[in-house]
Amino acid sequence: MTSLDPVLDKDGVRLTVEDAVATVTLTNPDKRNAQSPALWRALTEAGRSLPGSVRVVVLRGEGKSFSAGLDRQAFSPEGFDGEPSFPELARRSDTDLDAVIAAYQSAFTWWRRSDIVSIAAVQGHAIGAGFQLALACDLRVVASDVQFAMRETSLGLVPDLGGTHPLVGLVGHARALEICATGRFVQADEAERTGLANLVVEPAELDEAVKDLTAALLAAPRDATVETKALLQGASSRTYDEQRAAERAAQARRLRDLAGLGD
Image (spheres, one colour):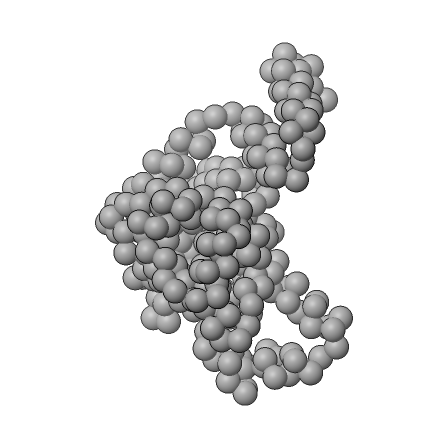
């Protein structure tokens, strides 16, 4: 597929595909790409709509900010049209409330699928749900004006969109706790120093830097990248000997495939 006609364009999310690269764009710059349940459903649909040819997914936000987080309308008694308000959610059973939050989380989980590598191109504000969406991706290329912040705790809530696991994995427990509990801003230099950002560039260079990284990722054979990503994803949950065994098994599959002996 080479057309840049949108595969999906709804509720503040646009998905386009060009050959092996998909681009998911948040398209509400007037509200700094604030998020809503409708946007989360569109993000989930975007993940389900990816053609099998896609190897790299780029996530970006239009305008000056990547995403300023949850739309404040969510905190009003009325909530969003057609959506349960926060007070209404609080009155639901544990099972129903768990199911609703799990559906919201599905917009943030597919970015780490082993068959793709996802890159968040982040500029300006990435607050709360915006921070968690950037953390959902495998890699982050950020502009020098970036401002990350996890504001949920300051609002009496917790980060519940999958962001706590990658945040701790990147910066460690103590720094993650401090970032979340204080809600402070993390600027570009700290993001690069602590591993939140793979690369920091000037805002005008963000798109080009993402293109260069995408090209580098596509240079390796797809199956080798898929196997390597799976090895790295499982490394923290395996012992050293278990990881060595996983490496041997993955390498055996690669050798047989390269020799034309694969399934």
